[in-house]
Amino acid sequence: MITLEEVHEMGAELEGWLRMRVHPIAVKLLKDEEEVPEEAIIPTRDWGHKYALCQSLARSQRNGETIAMFIGDHWCPEPVIGLGLAERIPYFLEGHHRYPDSVRDLEAGSKWCTNMPFLEYGLYKGVLSAPVNTCSFTPDVIVMHVNGMMTSQLLNVRNWIDGKDIHAQLSGHAACVYTIVPPLLNRDCQVAIPCKGDRSIALAQDDEILFSLVGRYR
Amino acid sequence: MIQRYHEEYDLKLSYKELADRLGMDTHKSPPGPQKFREH
Image (cartoon, rainbow over all chains, first blue to last red; front, side):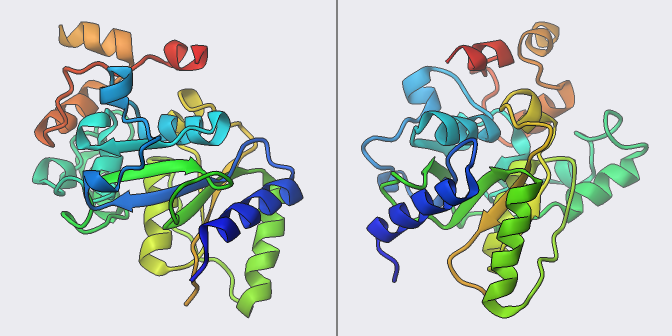
């Protein structure tokens, strides 16, 4: 079992070695509000408004804040479904929120929604984020905004462990879901693409993608 | 009111509809992009 001190040390070493723009983010899924650390910000309680998950992750990685979000703190619905905070209702599975804005027909919308990675409904009630070098909890997954050079280095490290490559499910939507959920389901590293929200309201850069780490590999 | 929500907060109406059906209480306002950048 890795200690919190080791998490901090390795996070700081990773950040320095890669010369990252922002901190790697420690992400933990919460089963109960009692798991929220004392220092954590809850957006609706402490800021008086909702946040998108990508915005909270951006604040954790840039400002060093610890942020906990439950269903009432989100205003983007896809992470609410992807993290299992709400059920995959028929309206979602039929693709209505994607059509006609981003798919050519409802069938394509339904296909994308059905294929979006998700955690089983009811397992978790919230999500917690903080910089990995100062987090007060053991992360379930570590999420990083990295450029091509950093990705190459991280992939080399992944190969070094057991020779396996990464097989990723990629989409231009719901970056928070695609970077958090597959690593938890597959217990392996993951790459994901910043979505429109991550770039436009959470300040992901044009040359960045997302890389996720989990503690154990299959 | 819905139009105002759309213009002020850039939340697509189709997203708002889904969020409402999920019980996310969208009447509590999200910050706009500019507000986020001010922090």
